[in-house]
Length: 511
Image (cartoon, rainbow, N blue to C red; front, side, top):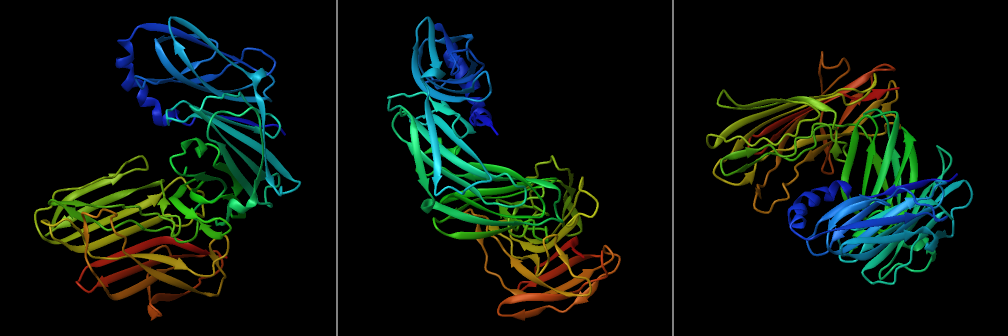
């Protein structure tokens, strides 16, 4: 099976540069540039060409084989394209000086094979893909990449040290429910060589064992693994990307180059957690979609007589903490019986409230949310968080308090407890800092924790005893009959009298 993917990753990030540079470029003497893009048979084919003016910083994409007006000057170019048969893929980059009507050519017939493999190879039953990116070494946006089935990728050589080549290989199992995923990459730092024949070893890889559950999300999910370039080497970004689909729940292993990786999952909803570092030769277990998706943001903080609500995500996965993008709901701040701020929000709303507060005293912040658009039977559909806290308006500091993160133990891959069983639920006392060194985080301690559960979607709540052992607080929750649901609630009181109540409906199911 032949597959080719063309990537121009700088489009969305660098698009504004065209607007910024246009006024500068318009004052220069006009010329024109025609970039001929020829496939492996010498036939003119469609291509986008990244064009960067090294003096003015003007950046744009132009179409191959068409005359384009440009100011005279020096330009860095990069392009990638496929042949008329949609099989052979070509990537290349070189510089050109525009002076009047100028023509330059990317000739696929001059391309040399990019052969990259993993040693030892995973064996049969895999689709073997190869990728390559040509970039300017001055970190300009003149960068293009492409991937194709092994044996179908070519790079046009260039001896100039102003360009470099990043390359990679991936192996994806043809089976939808078995087999590991493999990705390895390398780089030629000066120039584009006349052909690449690289065998990359497994010793530099790290292993991520992923267990992706269903319940909070379901159906077919897109999994993405994005590596962060090291040492300012942005050229390797496009060759350190892996994406595929699996039906939830799913378990699989991914082997990728050691370094910093961002892992995300997208189905009906979306979860992500930013970059984390993974060491070569090590195995890390990742649990995605675990019960319970609930309030997981940072506590509010004061800043020059304003109250910043912080990260108010009501539907964070307990391990992969970003996401819950389907939420809609309301936020309300009160003080001394008066509403200072009230707002309803939808999934498309960007919340960044920071109302001015009248002075030091006790405040109550309440947020409720619901995730819509999910299939019937989905978990973690509604949640709320109520914080009652003392704020000192004249100081830049985070308020005292805690947020409960629920973690039911021994659930299956669909986040279900067995009918008739008793589930131990860990009560995590979350108190994340702001990450801003100018905002003080006050010391605090837990005075008491109370907890409840519901099996009828909140019509009745039953108290359950909180046990403290080894610094961990847990509650025992008896399961209702088969097909039932369990909701959870917890109230924390700290040693200064601040309280927080966290509630999640349909937190987990019963098989």
